[in-house]
Length: 463
Picture 1 (tube, rainbow, N blue to C red):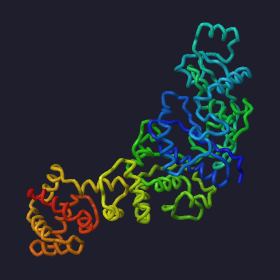
Picture 2 (picture 1 turned 180 degrees about the vertical axis):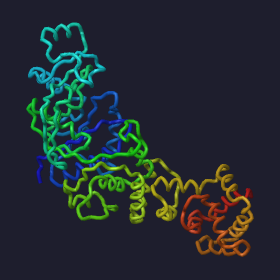
Picture 3 (picture 1 turned 90 degrees about the vertical axis):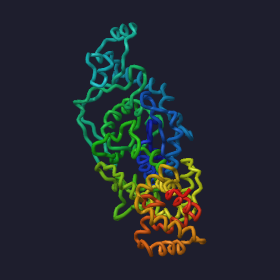
Picture 4 (picture 1 turned 135 degrees about the horizontal axis):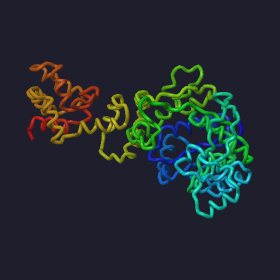
C-alpha cells in the first residue's frame, strides 16, 4: 500500500452532471482502494463561458449519493489548498512569467480569432522594444507556449508506450487575452502544486499529455504517471455537449428513480471487467475491488447502452431484499418530494413490475387517478364491455371481505354470464388501464374495497 500516491480527478461544474464524471471517479477510487493513496478533487472553472461553480453543492451531493468519495478537495480542504483553479490565478501568472523569461512562451498579438490556429505573424521573434511598444499601445495579446516539435513519448498504464510526432502542432495558447489560463497551463501547474503522482482519466486526453509534460518539464515539475480509460460513444449524438441532459445526466437518472448501486454497476462494467468473471450484473463496488487490475480495462471506447442500464436497474430492484427495497423507495420519495400515502403492501406488489422507482410513482398515479380525464379514457377503452363491468361492480358491492380469495369469487360469479377471461380483462382495464401490474386481484386487494368500488362507480357514472 502506497500512501504517497496522489491521484488527481478534475472536472468543470456544468449545467448538468455528465455520466462520465462518476465513472471517472469510480475508476480512480478502484485504483486508490487497491494500491493506496489519496484522491485529489480539483475544480476547473477558468472557462467562464462553461463553468457554473454555484452547482458544486448539487454535484457533490449526487456523487456522495453514488457512494463516491475523495480525500482532498474544495469541500473538505487539504494540505495543498485551494482546489479551485480560479483561486490559483497567481500561480498561473508566476508560471507564465517564468516560461516567457526562459523563452519557452511568448506574447502573441495576433487577432484573437486566430488563437486556435497558431500565430499568424512572427510574434515569437519580436524584439523586446516591439513588445513594449505594443503593450504601451494597449494591444491585446494571448500567451503561447513554444512547442517542441520533436517526437514525444510516455508510458500509459493501460495502453503501454505511446509516441507522437509534434511537428504539425501549432504553438498552443496557454493564457487567453482576458488573462485566464487555458487547460494545458493550469493543469500542468496544478499537477506540481498538488503533488500529483497519478492521473487516471478518459482516452480523449491521451494526447494532451505531450503538451502538458513539455510545460511541466520547463517548470521543473515531476511528471505523474498516466492511465487513460475508454470513453463513451453514442451513434448520432454528441453525448459530451454541455447542455445535454436526460439519460446522460446523473441527476436526471436519480430523479427518474435509478438506484445508485445500479448506476455504479453499469458505469464500472462499461469499460472494465474482472478477469474470469462472466456476469457482473449484480456486483457492488467492493465486488470489483477484490480483484482490481489495470490490465482488465478495455482499450476500446464504449457504446452508451441506455437499455442495458435500464435492464441492470430492473434486476437490482428485483434482487434487493424487501427491507432494502422499501428503504430505497422511502429515500426516493423524499428526494422527489412525493408525499402521497402508498401502502407498504402495494409498494412490495409493484416491486417486480417496475424498471425504475419513477415507474412506481407513475403506476401508483394510474391506480389512484379518478380524475374526469382518466375516467373518460377508461370508459372509451371499455366501450361495450360496460355491462361486464357493471356485473363486477355489483359483486364487489356485495363482497364484505376483501382478500384475493374473495375477489376471485367476485370474478367467478361474474363469469357465469360473461366468461372468466373476459371479466378479468375488463376488471384489469378499469383499475390499471393498459399499465402492466401483474395480478389484478393482488392489486385490487392493495387498493382496498372503498377505492376500488369508488373507481368502478365513477367509470360506470353511478356517482
